[in-house]
Image (cartoon, rainbow, N blue to C red):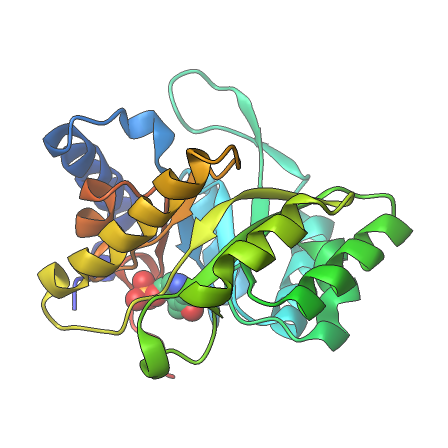
Length: 248
Ligand SMILES: *Cc1c(COP(=O)(O)O)cnc(C)c1O
């Protein structure tokens, strides 16, 4: 497994950003349109802060409860905006994204915590998020998670139900649909995930042609983000290559 963690978080982040730039160049894409989601699930706050100081702007968490503790501790330690370590010194807001499966009974907490929810995969969940977002007067940014790998994937809306969910989410007052997300089955060889990424891109193209706004494609993890970028990813979710192997 690709991991640069032994170099330290800051060097690992630089290495990943280099690879993002190279893959973008290879695909003739502008690297600025590709956002790195640093997946910080199971990572303790001090190391997350180290990553933020080294330039991580988006943190990805997969469990609401774990994220809630971290985010509140984080807010008490660091202001919501941190100066960029980059050359321009601009102030950036740190974003927290929910990348894992969300249960309806945690929707209320999720809308309080997360800037973007990647894992909307049912009408019931979308309705609950819309209702909860309305209550706190928020427009919740969301992605629809699509299941492209048949029975092997637990979560995500099956392709045949996708259009219906897309229409539904698009029409909700307090949700703003920004794009699509997928998790292909794990393959040791990253090339094997390419067809899944390509399929999500085609799906997005297809519905864009019908007037839906699906600009973001959240796809690619430590093992295969370079392939995902070649296939059009605008958000890559990279955990272990930055923070090291997790224990589960
Ligand atoms: C854990 C996780 C990732 C990151 O996985 P790595 O292989 O550590 O990069 C990305 N996306 C989702 C949905 C995850 O749960």
